[in-house]
Length: 313
Image (cartoon, rainbow, N blue to C red):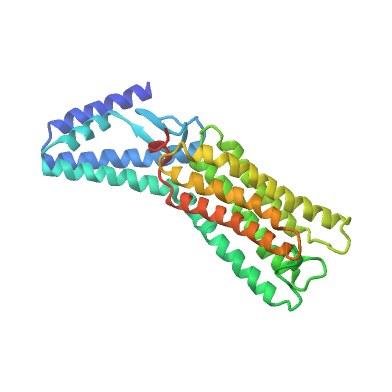
């Protein structure tokens, strides 16, 4: 009953607007948009991404089968389309105002993903910086023969600086990137596998930082946990890396990242064949370079963060 009454009120408002003078029409139309804006934000906050988002007037338009980017469709939309087709200058200004309102609300919703994307873009530079600082602080450290994990081994000086800065913090950012990708492609087929495996990769990487490697006793508990975290992180990354291109190619905006991301994943596997001979550390560092380049690439896509519902096939 309340929904019917609200819809009737909107219809009455639109009929009144059509009979009003242009200045009064402009004020009433802006008021209508403001009410819709407040309601949409409230509906989004209440639903928290669930499908239980409903409108007290009009019909909600879902984006990617979720409430992540919602706009409430009311009879006022029909009137605003009339404004857009009108030859009246003031009507065209109101039409542009409506477009700006939609863009502003979309930016509010996309802000967390932009922040996650920025962190993912900065992560490769952060890892390279802390790696070179920590390796230069150890005169006995060799890039060609030593494993990266040895910067944080149980007998290494300042091991917790490396383990936290080189493993725990990057792992947390990678896990956040997984949640950002899930939010960006919410409801799309295959996103759960890709995002969950990326979150697992980040958490396992952080685990390898919590348990420093004991290279003198490879059967110790801390070494086993470190190895599980390192190896598991890479396996989870491969699952995500091979499932993401299929998802990316379905988006007109993200399609450009599909092939580069797949190439980086394949290169990360190819570097494993270089981890032998006199310089096994070179292959490991090249593998890390491919891994973090992939993270940065996904961060760029997430930072740009075009609305998926307008670009998915």
